Length: 391
Ligand code: AMP
Ligand code: MG
Image (cartoon, rainbow, N blue to C red; front, top):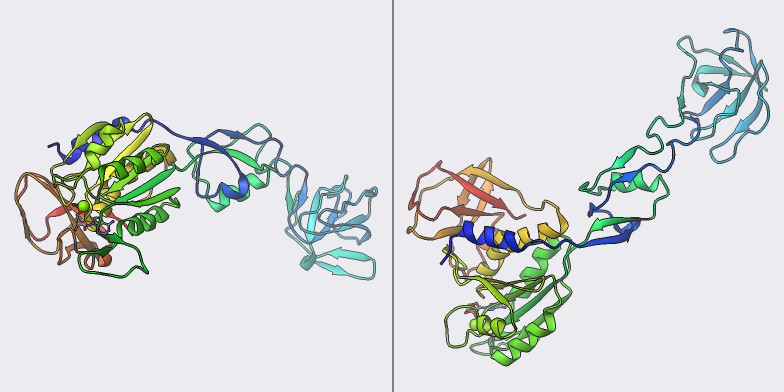
């Protein structure tokens, strides 16, 4: 059996594939940019009014006398006439500055008669209220680098350059196979010995936290051939997650079915609780996670291991790993890393009641997973522990 750290290292060693995809700008938000982008033109690409007001030539204005309004420039509708001395142009925010004008006085700072204005702005200087061409970015400037998270503001910024497609690090295709003869679906009759299948739902919701929807979900019986068929149908995924049937019981066929499907085992069994029978393998580029079926084991392994594999594709950060003091003492046996359902409050973390791996009532209340190291057995109140936030 290997340690949690060895398992993490082995998985990281197999996470080499990234998928770069060309996508429309409209769907790029939330992804990470996979190319360096340069400005195709100066932005703004013309001298632009920053306010509603009047544009004129500062040099030609004597500082006192009235200016005659000789025309109008609206955003998107230029003034094409000539600005002669003693005249001003009515101008609005976003309009192109007419040739000859270099200063704008805002409308609140003028006294307006029929067709004339008197400027009442003592602080007005040449160039006031103008967004100069190229004052945001110059043509050819690197505007965003590979690795940049495309926030709504980034998308808006790029849209301003008329970009409509760009390269991003794509989500991996994730397929899920839940195995178990006992599993029934909502709407089926709950008879003795059967249970409602919950792992695929928990995994889908966890993937949704990462903005990923699984591309295929199958529920299959505990029969080697059926499991093999399901595996073969799903080996085109980037990440294949199986749940159940990976332990040592007579009906645990997943590991042998994977072997028969030519999945190369990287490890099977990790010194951890819950989720000790955790299996990881690889088939061509497909990463295969076979998780022990108890619902708490499934989600714990997902958050602790599968998320890191997903990050290797998307290069995004999802859940924070932090350190916090415990609110209570805790004893455990040596030789296993414990992952415990926890709840944080005011900078501390509490271990919840109900840590057994079949119990989901406690997990439903958790906002984090507490990691207690393999060899340490006694944890005192205020001991600092590693915490993975999962909300
Ligand atoms: P296994 O890993 O197949 O030995 O399953 C361990 C426990 O998890 C058993 O009690 C199973 O009934 C339960 N289990 C396995 N798969 C699921 C599932 N998809 N949904 C809910 N419980 C499951
Ligand atoms: Mg089973």
